[in-house]
Length: 479
Image 1 (cartoon, rainbow, N blue to C red):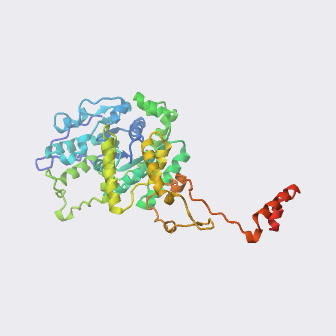
Image 2: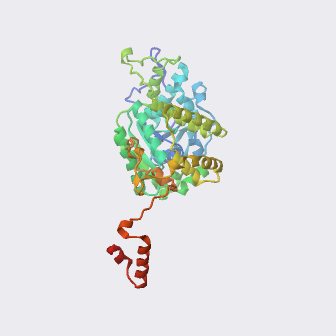
Image 3: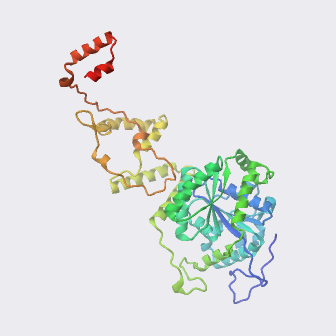
């Protein structure tokens, strides 16, 4: 549905302020940010298929591709944008001109990169953007934000602008831990209502098991209750649909691949059946513009005295490390940078060792991984073999007394501190179980001659016992 042009505004009114119609309160779409802690979990595919299914249910849906680095929504739908958001910001085109028509009448705002850079726009561009967003919002029932994976500021901003957060996880340990980190950082910035979708599982039982591990850790460590919205089964049809650029939500209603998203859309409808009044998407960016001046200094928002402006919490070390990790993984994903990343990691690890006196890496686990592919790691394994003989007494095994009884080392008697990070039920093998070591220290053997007599006499008795058909057990009992 095409939006009508905004009415002219009085001179004494800010052009960027979202307008209210004279007939009553503005009807706002339900805004949902679909996100994930790591990439490759099917987030964009879920966004597209969920949007199409909601449209098949009769809802007016707009999908905003908010991944500022890798815009995939238009690719999944097989549609190609001609204009971009910069054409709207320049004033040359209204936002309807850049919106693409998708299946079942859904609208797509492609590659909204400049929205993520909103605070760097000049005031005129800010006013233009907020006014255009405010004008089209009443045309939709759902606004789905397909965010970038990870914990970047852009991703956290889009989640903050939404009424709900739909968090996509898979059974992979990295998916669970990265999703946990995303939630932790999000809660430090803004309260969030989180719905969880478990993707790439075999059935409902596996999905609930994965969700329970994740939700249990979140509730224990973050004091947040997350909700199970649904699951998507592992399905080759989904892979084929991506290649063919034909979403499975367009399959017949009785098709199993399509029914997964029908259940998901129905569950989503139930969560917003009685929606509470919430902010408009344009209002979020309006407040962002008003609290940042063009020179980067913070200014109070309209209607708030300077003393009431909430101070932005300082960035913690954990947040900086999470952001650095995300940026480093992005660089590593680019071709031709692996050697530079390896050199950087080696330098950081050397500095850590110098500062703490301990390695930051699990050396046993590293050696185990190299042993899984010895041909590939022939050179470092060969160097280790040359170095290890000098440390053989320390690596030989448990210390024993003269009788061969094992004695615990001092370091073995120490109780390691408990790991405060959630493990999501993942079993971590002990180092001695992960890498068996051949014991090189011979055990001492002794013979109690006072009890058993000379060894030669005992050997003769055993020999005669065997010739007479006697039992060795009886001899042992007599001894």
